Image 1 (cartoon, protein in one colour):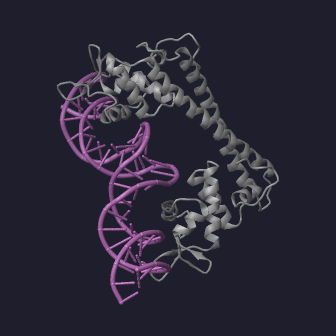
Image 2: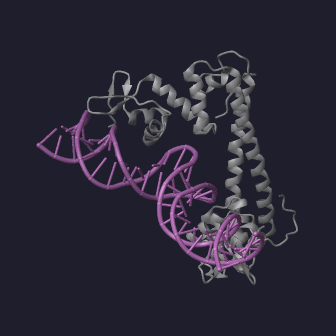
Image 3: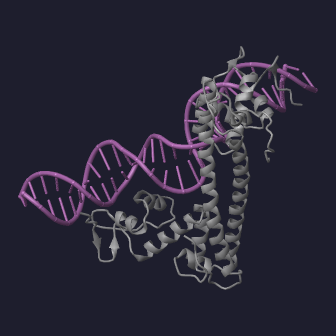
Length: 147
Length: 147
DNA sequence: TCTTGAGTCTGTAGTTACTACAGGGTTTAT
DNA sequence: ATAAACCCTGTAGTAACTACAGACTCAAGA
């Protein structure tokens, strides 16, 4: 069935994607934006990835899961690549990111209250009028809408 | 200073943007994607917006603030435009959206715990090694990382 | 050996919801 | 009269991918 080629430890792009649960195109994209280095190629031009590439890709994917932007990861990786990073630098970026996440949570929670409020006004009958629409049109509603 | 032209009740694009606290280009964008109808024009070709347009734009902007996607708003507006919407239809969309928001909040909260955990491991000394980096490289950490 | 199907290559376009020009015409204020 | 501040159009850029199209390569079965 699956017969993805592999030369010793080196795997092709599709195989690497499968191993890391990522999309094959994403890997090429990371190479294009120079987040991943250009790998060596087989005679016929196929990309071949070794263990360093695998580890680096996992790092990036995990970072993305944790909501770091590509640019944040680029910084993080340049620190690691340089080998001269200090825990302080990394910590700072993490804390800043954490603050962004917390802000986003707060925003969404306010949003949630407003939506819940809106939807509670109207339990969805067949009436051709709806408090939700009224709210969107800016009409005042009984329940306070947090701003 | 500012003397944005207005013919009777009708205002130009820049004026409408100012009134609604939106970006002038956004208005043109909404017209392009047919979320806003093409307005009438002055002799020289300037767009002129009346009160209906103003209300509609406010509706859209408020909806966007509440996290509705353009496509959701398009549906909502088509219900309104048709005039034959029922509260039930609108309610359904709102509840669905609310669920998306709640899911997003949960995801972010898990993320927050992980990040807080990571950053707590390392208080940011000058040591050239960092638990945050270790986590990203997939090394096991003491505190449990929620998945 | 030939064929077939899966895998890979490249470049490019599409996604979401805007925002930012560039190069021109128009209107208003001084 | 002239400059400043508008507006017009079309196009490109943003973030982070994803999805093609058309061509090449590789491995396995008949």
